Length: 392
Image (cartoon, rainbow, N blue to C red; front, top):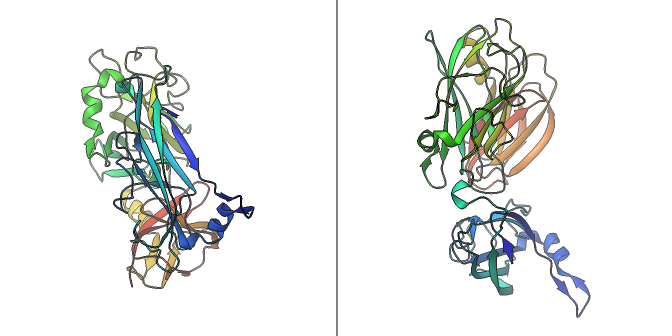
């Protein structure tokens, strides 16, 4: 029995009471030989959506644990229950543990190997009397783009964030930081998209503008206008909103920003609140549900758009596509040590190490399955990221 609209982490433990053996520990030691598959009644969960991967290996399951080959195991998984209109939702929940020594691959299915367990539970999702109505649930948003357009003409600049696993346990992650030209006035537009259901969330917000409002928080001395540090801590602090709802209250899909002649590095936070029935001239960031809460870093301070191109091209990868050894270099002065990460399209971190910034540095990637990956170099206040393709 579970509660509606709730995120759970589910762990599986297994024991052999005949010989007093901890089978969970054995599976962890032989993780490259084991995999859990799941089948469940559709409409039980918002994440993972569907009915499980017992019938189709590629169907979504929110695995938290992976073997030495970066393939899922399933001793730990995440589940978010559906919002329900009636008293309860009932169905079944099947768990299958397959033993696949020598045959577990990125495409092996429930039909490969031996079966250690195959159990089906009855499942019931109970109503939460304190939960908001289903239509007031927060939006599913997987992609966010900030577009900065100079009001006097010039290069349009963007900053982006993305949910690497779609609807799942991983939060939206910044994929491109903010880099703006000094002493420039910009109109910033926000676009939002749900790639899981192929929905334009920007359009939905425009249609329900009296239920939504963006709040902003940023480091002092980034902008000549608006001044201060944003209205996340104080609703009445200045923000240059361009769009307003049917009640003449601000929305925030379009705002104006003027950078200082001498900018500092800092952070820029964007929070979208869903406030059906509670949005007023005095409602704050603490009112309603939260659709997004993302903080971007301000990257390299620049004086012209030409400098931005140099900053974007600072991280170099070779060869790309790569078969065995990926070399990276970062052409940035006065940097010593950086954290280097490789993660896949699902946001799973496959490599993380502190490395010196000096010329070309090799990373062995021959063990990675073929596919698209991302290499990220980051420090406390900046990050660089590029995509690469692993092939045979």
